[in-house]
Image (cartoon, rainbow, N blue to C red; front, side, top):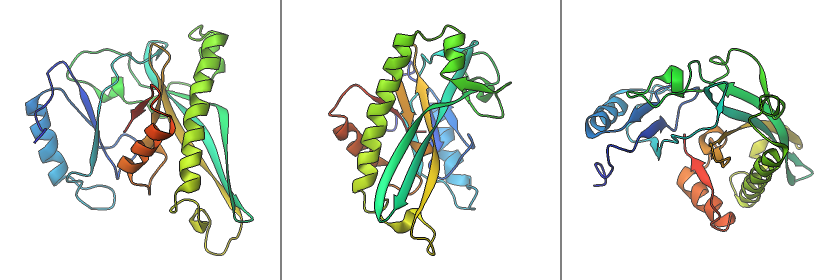
Length: 231
């Protein structure tokens, strides 16, 4: 019933839950585009051969991203989860990759994926966080510290949720024949032009209920100002 409850000034990004690498992402900003998107997902199958239907996450599009060399980008950070001696531990690496779009950022509609989609394959070189943002004078040392502080708060909340989540605190992190092990997960962040950090939940939690995770993350962050990009 909330189908048309948005204005033409808003743009939304639609991303199927059971997808990856930017596949079948759509952008909508009016009723006609929404109708086409609904029909598209009703008739399009994912990589498993299953119709998407309504298994799609919609979120308001972030129109003010921080730009790197005039390009939209996201940060691919790394998060290690270990299960050793029946104990869950997690570690967050505070360095990562800068992955850009192919073409310079613009708000011109309709949106082009080459402008708004950020991936390893669309980046023209290997760029690294934080060194290349600092070298490009996009960040001061103080802003870098503020960004890391936000990431630490977010990931501390994530770790606490995973530790308490029955689905993730058990041995399913491991292969059946293993008692100890670890996995390195990619964590995607965006930064807007106000230096707010936005986490891409879809990049991490493949087997967890998204809505419940979002609620828990907001509660864990004690309702602090935090944006969650559900792509």
